[in-house]
Image (cartoon, rainbow, N blue to C red; front, side):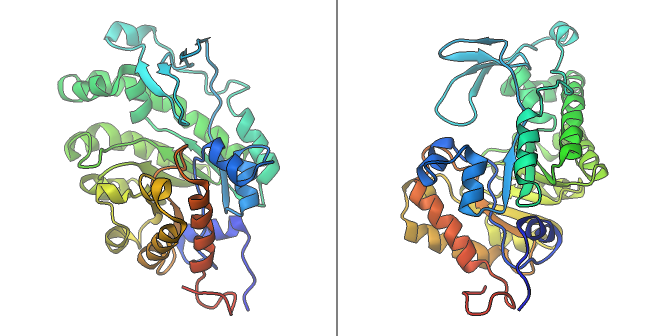
Length: 351
């Protein structure tokens, strides 16, 4: 009987081939769900470790120069409204006209506190779990800094302005990502959203001119530092998919079912080129379904995505505050139950 892989070995193998079983990973879990499943957990990574997930993850640390009970401003100069979920909603940005851009400075990527939480994550879990770092490339933080609708308007009427802004954003982000890999990140979760449920935010032509070169810059930097690049984007990305693959990404996440990103179709299209990371519905199923329905969905996802490897089980976005803890537990357990590849662990259910 082959020996079981460690979690880091399992994840590394899944990027390019077939491990002993499908890795179970998650990039963002709400503390409320983590605490419900592991009441005495120190934090979310501790809960995921004790639940047996194959990876732990965190992002950079950002200070808040101004904060009230309902709002705050971060180091990017973006004003947010506080909410119940893990990501607060941006309501205003500091760059609206070119004069603003001349005065605006992105955060210091080398600030001594920038990777303090990540440094602690590496110290606690490196070698036991795969260590992921989530960050952005150029598009979404540019959208926060100037507003999503304004940035898309600039794409059409003043693309040079848009490029100047995105170049300043991506220079900062590339440095943070390189620093994280040098500290121990094995994969970078590049979390820029490009689409809504029905279509991308921009045409393929605009994507190729304005967004893709900056994505490729970040992917190339990740590879230069020796890590894997997982591209996250919500929505229906079919019109952009081949261009994203050409950027050299190693993983694709989260493949939202409600946006037409059906796992079997994506597997047939590009499952030999990229590791698929997804795609259990976190909208209705994990929030309102039953553990039995979750188990059935996991089994189907493994049937659709696991052949030959290059698949990791994850949610279709994140484990947000509305996810039922018992459903997330059912997802994790079903992943281990049905995700075993033939030839490993005789006597257990093997896919």
